[in-house]
Image (tube, rainbow, N blue to C red; front, side, top):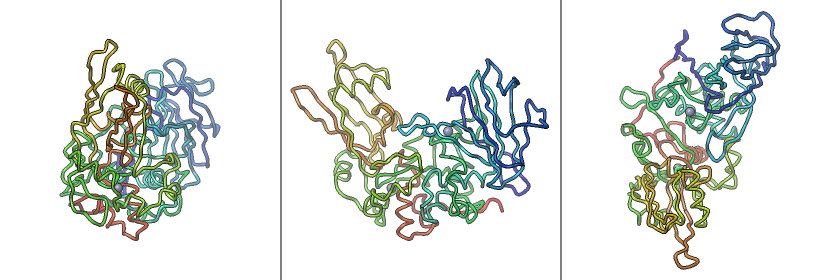
Length: 431
Ligand SMILES: [Zn+2]
Ligand SMILES: [Zn+2]
């Protein structure tokens, strides 16, 4: 990360990644304060809208072929922005769609293996102002937006995982890292959330917390170490998402089942937020759904098809889905699927992470791995399956809908962040 004179970092966010296999992008410049460099040559005259395509191993812009295009934005005002169209949102998840994105900061367009690579270089605080209302809706109360902004700032500065290090990015634009959809969703309250918390991060000891978060924990959060192969220290521990924080061990099958099927009073549940009103508080790409408790049913043949498409494992029929290990929140960490192959012999598939469980057991992506499996027998030896689950996402760290519930119940920004991240403090790291 580069530092400017106020120590506010400039970060690099990937908007279009080589893996998107995108061949064209349309760019529009709004405002007057732009400069254009084509292969490092400053252009005296240029239009404020143009298309960039791929022509074998070069970028093409009208009749010009080049390796790199840089658009310099010499202003930080909201009136001076660049529109990039299209960009993928929800890459690989069940809510994937194409959107356009309007960004502050500079834009760098490159080509890698005949595919477009578009990067937004932006001041951290300008980025954060967009993240709060990309992750959650603009109508969210102030303490939720401030908590979300502190968490997003801490995460990007700590980011232990560095998923896109090979591309020299701090993050991508999407749910894989944290959701960033430019200035379209920016409102006065998200600008204020960034200003009120400017430079503030969560720390544990002397280090900035890798403050993970997910949409809905389902009533209890998961230990970070159970989701990623990373040692997160105590701040990503499992917590009960309610006023009553008595610990409860949901790694045991019976405990989890009883807990799941009985009403709990959770910050992320209907006691605090009626799901009928939730839509107005969510990000504009989030799907309407029931996040706290959900249910999905498969016929045997549907599940056989999905598992084959997602894992390459061919069953002729499935006999049993067996959770082997559950985490503190009941999320399944390892499971075994047993069935028959094409010759009628026993066969099985082991799945060894909550992410893979969610990826393989849904045609797009399952809400969470915190579920029980009900087996229904219509005919002898012919089973259908119903998954009954809790929460949306990996469930470690801050629960966004729970934080919203706390915020609507009048809790402060500090109360929210310290509820989800135990043994942490807040620190200002730049002015
Ligand atoms: Zn990413
Ligand atoms: Zn929660």
